[in-house]
Amino acid sequence: MKKFKHIFTLLILTMLLVACGNEKEEVSSSSAKGAEVEKKELTLMGVRDAQISAAQIIAEKQGYFEAEGVKVKNHLIENGPEMGSMIAGGSAPISLMSNFLPLTITASDVNVKVVAVLDQMAGTQAMVSRPGLKLESAKDLEGLKVGMPNGAEVYYAIKSMGEELGVDVSKIDYINLAPSDGLVALQRGDIDALAAWEPFITKGTQVGGEFILSGRQSNLPEKQGEVNWLSVHSTLIATDDFLEKNPNTIKALIRALKKGTDFINDNREEAVKILSPELRLTEEELSEIMNRNFYSMEVDNTYWNDSNSEGIMDYFLSVGNIPKKPDVESYHDFTLLKEVFPELITADALK
Image (tube, rainbow, N blue to C red; front, side, top):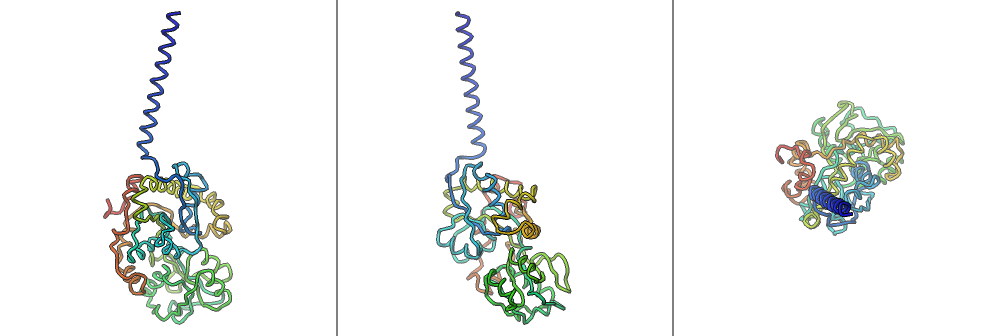
């Protein structure tokens, strides 16, 4: 009996030691991943399109946010430019939008930071003609009625095209139209072309229009194929106050969005099936649109150098989108991205 008691005691001690060891291992693992998130639940603002919010939707549908300890409710707006007023008004402290938005609102003294990059979407900022319009040369664009939302990023692609091909883009008759209204006007023949973003460009081709150009592709008689007329990226944006108070939450979001981005690249067909009902597009439409995007969270020289481009700043200043030129570093902070995925920071100036 004494011998049995000794054996039993040793077993109990061994189990306690193993339990303590496992507890230390769990604490160590938790510490390695980072401290607990500050917000267990939040609303993440985005846009109902494949170029801004694809990874965001996938991360929510695949449970990647919850796996990182944050219950996320996606709120997708229909018109991206409205995000600026929502951020300034305090209803969108953490959001996804193009890197041009933080530039413009920082210039108006709204304190925000780009904390991660999601994709290169210049290929989805484009122009489509009305049915039946035939261009003999790029110069034929002069004098045409083009529906385009004021301040749309696609204008910079049009401007760059004009500089390269000798088109006076100031002679184009721009009509301020939301993309949905522009699509209706295009079908009726009230405008000659629509300059906007996806999915309205693809929908324009479906009703008989012809793709003219995008930030990355030209179908003009003088210029066919790949171009570099625009660089614009989807980004994760946080207000300075949210960034200061919720660093671990933002790191959790970045990890989940990285999983979403990888899923899009590794499982495109399945991603299209998941995204199609959320974006209210057919799988065929969505596949075409997503092929115009380049999904990568890398902050490379192209992103950083284009963000520092004086040309884009001068353009925004000239059309009244910004009252002054902000310093690029004033609206970027990749500290948290570097902590989570240092390999994604490849821009020479940021190493």
